[in-house]
Image 1 (tube, rainbow, N blue to C red):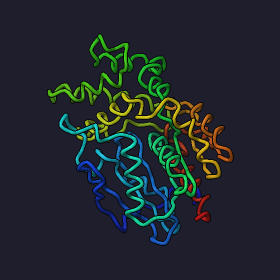
Image 2 (image 1 turned 120 degrees about the vertical axis):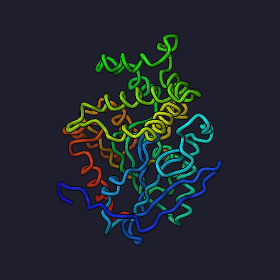
Image 3 (image 1 turned 90 degrees about the vertical axis):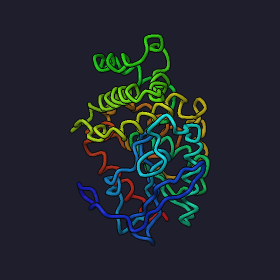
Image 4 (image 1 turned 180 degrees about the vertical axis):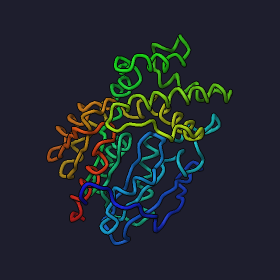
Length: 319
């Protein structure tokens, strides 16, 4: 592949899958129908699967499946208002959705890949269905722990004190010493649209701040879209307020279930949002896993995307 991503391609098949609880999940397939199946799990929670993610996959080698997790992107309904039922949007629901999609598409086994939150989701899925996983390629490694959530929402204020002061100022004073994600989740469920909008703007401003140390960073234009802001902030705060619906240490405790599944983990040295120790711990608990630390990347940026695509290419012959 060299030093560039694959050309942008359009899906050769797409649709909406009725998963459960009134949710219709958008999915698409790119590449070749006879290629090695691979499923891509986007970050967030709530960011949706951007068209740029299609460029990770060699269209002559892979049958790549991308989808928007329930409540976001092109899936419906959107989690953009207080009437949306967050009780039907949990990690368990998303894992079930992935398995329904695999069955719907008639895929026996596939490579699981994802970034950021998609890594946590992919690990939970793989631990529940290891027999369905050929290999794994994950980038910007997360494990959905309370330690990670507290780091992003509170401790990282030591790195960006001015921006964090603005972030926490949006929360009622009585709640500023508690679970900040939960406090924001309450604001984003307020019946007053003005309250919800201010909370979404403040939350997304902080999201853009804590990835700003990665090489080549520029403010994300996606936060200019009020619907995206609302959906993204509501889903992230919902998941983080509930510790990503995971038991303490669940992912690390379950790594033994992935024994024998080959994997490559890609992580940026400048990833302040997700410090390298999480990737290191997962690699140590997953024998045979290759941890690739990129000296020119953060939570993306630098050579991150190309490294992810190259890692996927290394599994071209494993189906």
